[in-house]
Length: 377
Image 1 (tube, one colour):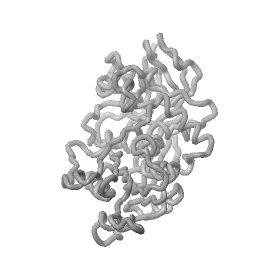
Image 2 (cartoon, one colour):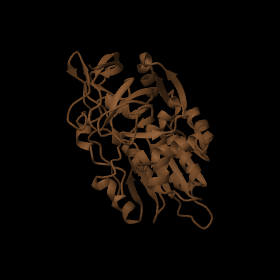
Image 3 (cartoon, helix red, strand yellow):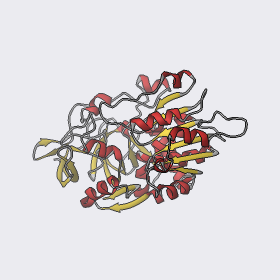
Image 4 (cartoon, helix red, strand yellow):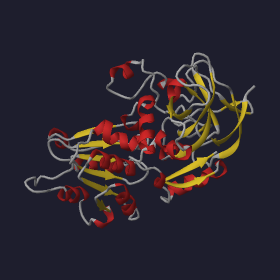
């Protein structure tokens, strides 16, 4: 007998979510049923809802930044049990596929094909409404108070971590901090520039502070983000509207010091998904060794461009997903960092609300009035 659950359904691109009852089938072999206690609303959810996502499928239950409790496990599940506290993972960690075994990437391929099709690994959906199939989203679908996930797509965490805070670790926190620590491997004393001080960019700044970066320049069009950046470790703020000239030249000039009059950051991070900013981020890197990390997701069909000279002279363009983190292994550690006070999450949760008000959370995000909104079930 399917379980009746409460969910926010995305019926079509560009339309508000509709909160309603849907049916959820129980877990099959290798799957777990999770009661979602809290979920963050991320720009990636808006990216899909807007219609800009080339892989977007409708109707679907969106959401990928959650935390909850395992309430039932299917056959052959051994790594988690009923009562365990978990964070869903939109990038699983099977520990058996060629990608996992390579230890060169966190991009597990075990269920990538079916995940992209909006279904479980056996090719079917667990969600339906009036007998009509609903698509899963990023393998998570946390905009429902219960969801079914593959065992390899849940990270077991400590029982005393608050769901309404650590749900943010399911995407934003890990993506930002991980881009610094796992992807860029920033060293102590580095100079860095962060483009975009939203929910990801602030966590990049937090990661840079943890890594011991000396100079952390934040770039954002919103002057209100200056105080936010400084709160998490930013040392300099640049509003492109106030530069009055070439942004890249301004940033390079800021990073010149002493005997080094070439200038440029050791590391830059693009956290917006703007292809023009991606170019600016690369060209703000130091000649010979600068690395630019692309975190933001651009719209379908958009391309990045620069002069080959920028790369020939030693700059590196790199991309990262989920901050290079291996979910089942790394997410519990990041939860521990939060619980130990090494990283801050609470200030970034600027709004909390019930599921009935989830569309308000999207409005706040679109208007730049929130860092992270969290729905609490």
